[in-house]
Image (cartoon, rainbow, N blue to C red; front, side, top):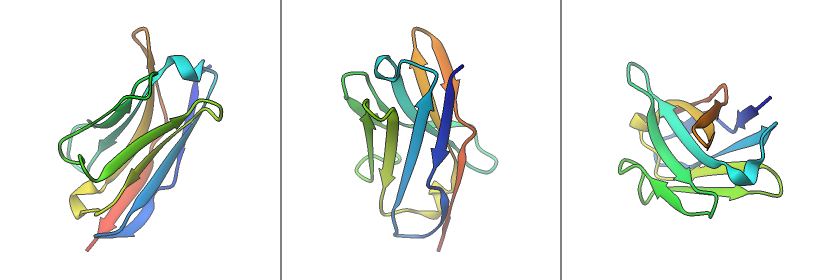
Length: 115
């Protein structure tokens, strides 16, 4: 059974940085496209960043230039690093794995950016 566990959230000052990590088990990690989503208060869940099985990354316009997604297939982990954080980055951040139309999700980790 697929299991994704996020870590690294917390309270961050505006202008600061964060590093989120997601460890996956129960999947063939290298064959999955890995993504980070977020859902802010009163907002719909949105895609933040994606990294393909080939390591090609893509970012939402709202974080482009501030975020870096990376994966380590040997450790079954995917990371999201963000800098120049803004209060509007406040959200629950979710890790997701996708392969052949089947997706798995983590429970999420809260990130709160205070000014």
